[in-house]
Image (cartoon, rainbow, N blue to C red; front, side):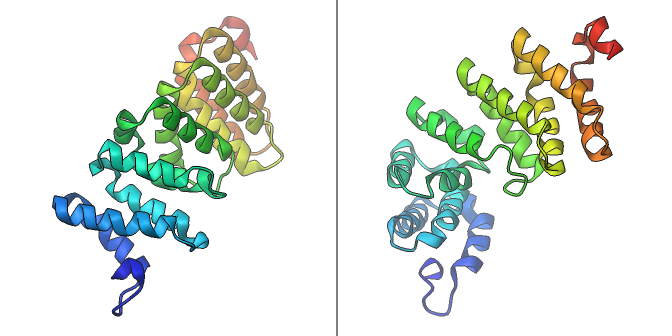
Length: 221
């Protein structure tokens, strides 16, 4: 009733409740809630699609492959597809990624990188966790794309973007190949010259992750 806003219940209260009880639902209850949510996701209420995707995300670790396939099929081609995929996967990508096929993982990657420099969408903890998972599963080409976006972000005009991207580079440095690592290190070294401490401190901390890999020339810089 809550997700349909009937009988005195509202969807937002129900979402908070669902987050708490998702792991305690039996199979019948799980199927009922999932059916309700995916029907809402398919509906005409465009402004709340991201919300319903997030609610499905609370259930995602318990969904089977067919149910996840249904969700991705439902989201395919929607104007809000990237937002909805991020909302769906934010809390449980590590677990549900094992149930996704390569095409679905590519869509998750595209949705993630689409807002990689957006400082308002995810808190630092969520961003770092997702980055670590995606960097592990990304192809060489995809990882290169992530690195390029983050290095560009360290030079962005926005202080928050520079800070966020400097922190994010630190998460994936150990997963980069030699060339990518060299470019990332040089970008972070450049960030040490930033006039704002909120930027140069994250750059320094990220460099600290791979300090033993720095060359004498890089250390001199």
